[in-house]
Amino acid sequence: MTRPESHVDEPAGRFAYDGLERIFHEKARLGIMTSLVTHSRGLVFGDLKDLCQLTDGNLSRHLQILHEAGFVEIWKGFHKKRPQTLCRVTVEGRDRFLEYINVLETVVQDALKAGSEPAAGAAAAEGWSPV
Image (cartoon, rainbow, N blue to C red; front, side, top):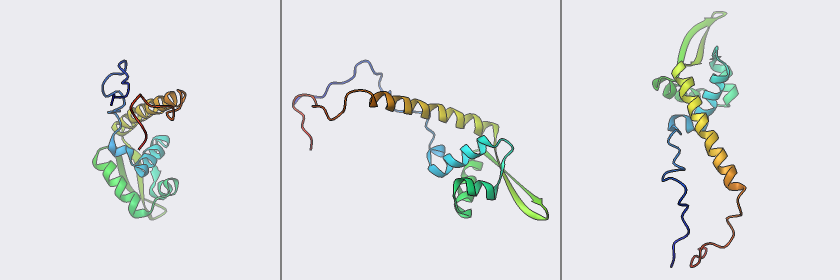
């Protein structure tokens, strides 16, 4: 049995995408970071919860993870005598998240480029058959 053709012109690890940080790659944290990056003055906890459609506990846990990593800062205060929590992205958080987004753009470009090539359903290399 022969091996399928390898793409000699592609460097090893071409699709490893080292810049995809696991901390941002979770759906809820992706939404939280996107919300905070697009609201530079920060968001009150309730507004962030609504934007991301998360429960209080779920949002709290994800914010804790992002805060411990140094990507989000949490401020406590009062508005009209009611306690409020303000969440803001840090400078490091913004920079690292934007780097992550740049890598995601590369993933999308690679996938779109592959999608414009002939269908994968075409015959495989000689000696191979579907399982």
